[in-house]
Image (cartoon, rainbow over all chains, first blue to last red; front, side, top):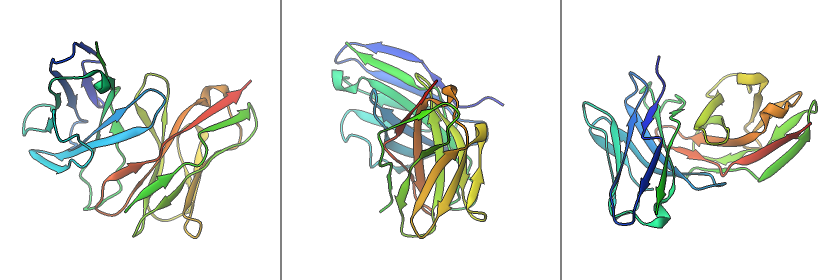
Length: 117
Length: 112
């Protein structure tokens, strides 16, 4: 059973370019979460998606950032017109649907380390 | 609103000694509680969780945690620390039907 896959593992972009981060959840998981982590800091929640729906995007910056989780294919976190402050590790996690409000744990991917020059 | 506190940024312990990493939480209902570990340049790994039932939960790598409802705590413990346990530890809480909330993390250093 493959775990959560993220690619690329490392991404370098120049200011103003676009960054696209991909996340393939554990097979059968329909819930996907994106987090950002700065060096030596905790996780900052960005967005929670289920297939074709954004459930909670309260942690997502209002501009330049978007996320999707289509019916087919991986979840995508897209950052337009990147700035140096976007440099961070971006982690994706997935969980099984389970019972409503259930306590299924998240499984994390290895992360994508974005560096903006 | 849900919240999680990890009052210690750093915990140092000698190898072979017991370790405790503290976590307190706040939720409106009955909590689901989790511990994760993060090694350098890696994603988070699930250690254990409390959903319901026995207050003492056993998890991976010899770790355990005790749910204390009256103190709203879920401290992570291990009877005998290993140098390889040195890592960043995150506590998380999830209220029924709500999203996960992670604590700020505690860096554990086990000294040989």
